[in-house]
Amino acid sequence: MHQITAIYGSPRRTGNTATLLHQAVAGARAQGVTVKEIFLRDLNMSPCLEIYGCKRGGECAIHDDFQPVRDDLLAADGIMLASPIFFYSVSAQVKILMDRFQSQWVKKHWIEGLPMGKSRSLRKGLFLAAGATRGKKLFDGALLSVKYFFDVLDTELWDYKFYRGLDYAEDIHAHPDYQSEAHHAGVALARALPPA
Ligand SMILES: Cc1cc2nc3c(=O)[nH]c(=O)nc-3n(C[C@H](O)[C@H](O)[C@H](O)COP(=O)(O)O)c2cc1C
Image 1: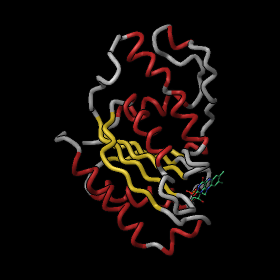
Image 2: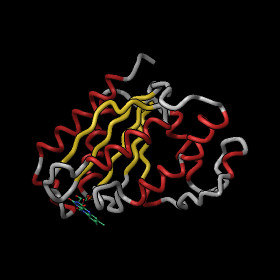
Image 3: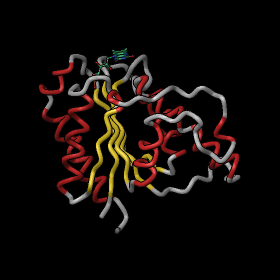
């Protein structure tokens, strides 16, 4: 059976992106996919300390909740990631997770010698993001970060959905259309996973 790991990246447990990701998760589960949900806000995860202990074998030298999350992501066939836009980027919680994956980048490119740009596409990923304002470039920074984060994870940025005009945590409830789109994105991701 397929497995998706879904990362909730907001400090709000029931805010806009959490509601959207919850819909995507429900959509994937309705297709028979097992989904593991991870709330980054509940975890004890240090930022990368840039000590490069990972140069010895590719294992991050900081031992905390990063390792089980890494293992869940690497064990998955599909990845869902949801983040609010904070100062035109992802949340601090998501950025910490991304930076800790530098250990995986070191493993792939420095230790195993894989040339840059030659990552295999083993997984499919869905990125959901929400911001309060409506600027044209609102999601550009986060999108680039997620694209290269997914690259380290051997994950194709298969789809993304961006939601503008959401500020207060409950704003999402005025948008059944957004929720329905996120639900369908979860269904579609589950259906797009290669045959088990
Ligand atoms: C620290 C912080 C920074 C933010 N920066 C932006 C921003 O740059 N652009 C924007 O449109 N909204 C910004 N917002 C608003 C959030 O993106 C918005 O409220 C979003 O819907 C929150 O999603 P959540 O409920 O899933 O956390 C910011 C909010 C916070 C708390």
